[in-house]
Length: 205
Length: 205
DNA sequence: CAATCGTGTTAACGACCACTAACAAGGGGC
DNA sequence: GCCCCTTGTTAGTGGTCGTTAACACGATTG
Image 1: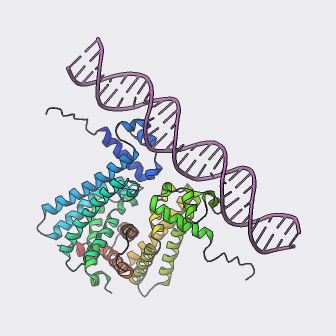
Image 2: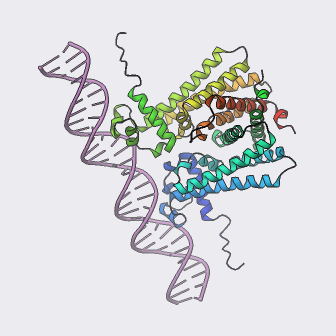
């Protein structure tokens, strides 16, 4: 045990990051001031600088963090491997949906505020994103060998847009239960991939 | 002819709006200053106030404008009516894709910066968006009667996310020719709708 | 018990920024 | 030929915001 700090259930840092993500998603990175972020966790303004080097550092940690978690989750599901590539694709989709539904603000910030990062952090995030995309592309091509690589890549990007649109659409509550939303999104994603591979299927008249 | 002003090919206002859209898409509403917008059209800073009441007014005109054009285009295609609802859906999708590919920055700003509008403008834009969504929902339900209304609405939102993801994905050039991108996006959208209506189709194992 | 570290406070500073004021130049209408 | 409307300019102003400085105070440690 030596020197385990055991810093409460959630550390101050995590608390700050969570509120910062919410505020950044609501009003944009440049739209929220450090005083607001501080107020959201009960401290005021410059107290944040005891935990982060600056506002930029908060955004960087948020974006690098979510990108890493997405990639790690994806790798896990690929490594776990099902009986088939199709099962892996199902798992990837389910995992991404869980992410999008659990961490709505983060997903929103993730694809809106990337360009507000310092060069180095932006490169890192983009690299993680690229690896995550490539993970999906390989699986998609395995399931649908008829699919061109560039087609698969475009389809993956588009499906991300589809899945990431959920945060976006429910400012008001009382939407259908989560499980049915999950199921619907999964169907939509699978339908899109199937159509990407097989022109005649969806577009047939 | 009486008193036609004939204000050059493109008016100053339009020129400003175009550059403002590009900059807002690149760096966010709060991330670009009026001096930059001015510089982009060859005048400097406060000269913009001869054409717009303020920065907010530019954003408002951009968002109201695109929302109206989307809705009008949609209504036209519905009224035009094909031989079938399916053809109308095809037309809606094609129209939206053209929009997304022609006015990339505008589409980006459209779903990122809505919350930076004054209350009144935001309400107007949201109302236009809602009407546009309902237009799609009706057509989707006609093509796929098995589809619940709330399912159809969620599917439409998700497909918008899918189609609007294109601006997003090509910072670097040299992507496949436009016509093939168009065709792929259309297939993806149709595949998603088909899967929304028919659970067993895409998700079958 | 004293020293230190972690964590918070308020005050102030410097930069940036949207917007206004005051002024200038050109061009068409009477 | 004078007027004035349009469309620019530059200088200035008030406010906001990120960040730093200086200080406070409780808990842990030796």
